[in-house]
Length: 106
Length: 117
Image (tube, rainbow over all chains, first blue to last red; front, side, top):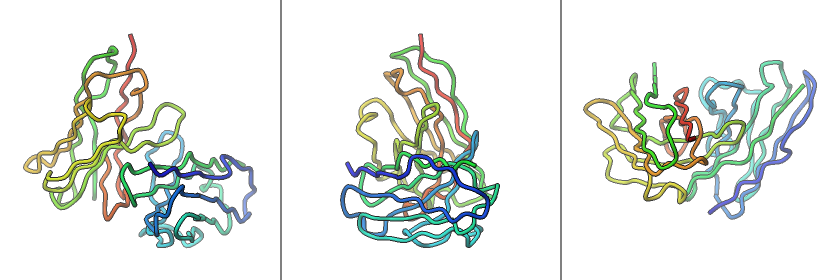
């Protein structure tokens, strides 16, 4: 199975900060990586697909990069509505797997 | 508007069975792969099962193989997950999710399954 390791598992940041979350795959997954945002009590929401493509309706402050085994999600200027948990997800090979999540807190 | 509404969750004893349903609307259901993703209380996301639009291809995570069965009825725009031989570690919110080229692009709110005696 492909292991997805996210770091950090949590971080504290302020409104206006630039935040970067990293996801490492245990083997090459090309660009078959997506990022999701989840708020408490809600279903996850897709942000990024194909490692760097912005999902429709998602603000451009979110960006993704990387390929192979190293990926990053960047929030350019953190806003109050961005405090949430973020997950990466690989769909290169079965079983599909998720990272453990990064909780972004104030 | 795409909508996915799960039903059928509840409390079940270890070793018991449950069937989850997902009613889909707002898109051509038969054209999409569908999947179930679960989340144990306070934990991360775990992909469970995946079914092609015409039902001809199915995949499972190893921990549920032989116990869970994913199926669909395209005439009813419905997705199902039959959960058998349930264990405490199967306790989770189960989300019905639409997949588009591997991206899980629309999620239902989920159905809580609690396995406990």
